[in-house]
Amino acid sequence: MKRLLTVLLTLMGMLGALPAHADELRPGYLELTQHDAQHWKLVWKAPVLGGLATRTKPAVPAFCSQSTPQARVEGLVLIAESRLTCTRDLAGSQVGLTGMDAAFTDALVRIAPLGRPVQAARLTQSQGLVTVATIPDRWEVARSYLVLGIEHILEGYDHLLFVIALVLLIGRTGTVIKAATAFTLAHSITLIGSTLGLVGLAQAPVEALIALSIVFLAVEIIKRDPANPSLAERKPWLIAFLFGLIHGFGFAGALREIGLPESDLPTALLTFNLGVEAGQLVIIAAVLALLFALRRFRPQVLAPAVVSATYVIGITASFWFIERLWG
Image (spheres, rainbow, N blue to C red):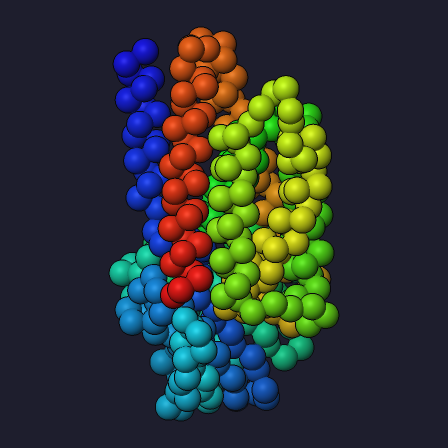
């Protein structure tokens, strides 16, 4: 009993230590586009937070000369554009980023040569360079954005807390899955619409509303009355769908900062969404498993554990809301 409470308190402390800027997944994006036999355009997008902008820089082969980068800052992203002049083909050589071992986030690289398929890869602390392939794997874009979607839901703390709170509110496996499906459908609609320029909202109010959605769920959990269920309890799929529309704009904002390959846009959007859904299912399964274990082995602990976790979630989200509203 004491050991279980210690674990719960540790988890609650970890939740309380989440950063104020909850949506922390901001990978960099390096793109090389070939214009002719010798010339390439290099675009480097690096988030100001996370170490990429200050600790890393593009790495190109020695037989390529690089023009002075034209840099600008948009929001919290540094964007630098330059030209490469290479004396021979890049195939077989390595490109990427130096200094990745000192950064706190990953980066995507996209290489678009003339007459060959686009190559995409993920750069990490352990592998900051990638070899330019003669015949790129057409599935690289799909794999890269699938992993990005999974990491975004797992490391985007506000989306993570929303899913956890939704499970705590509902508690029933079948109903949770239906609500999660509605949430996925909704954020897919606004994510695709925003990415394609069909709809849009300013990012600041979107981030504040995402935090407010978590506060709403926390309040619903605390004031829950089995004799008089609220709308959120009776129709959780509806609440999940409505808030999912808002979260979709948040996902779109993250993708805009990361960058999307224009020629592979449908693949990138589809696999990113699939990655988000896979990440959600992992979270839902983990929370349901924990609730089941408590209900089975420590039923007397279940109610206070849920209440305590809910207060931590609600207080954290309230802080995010105030910080985003006035920040």
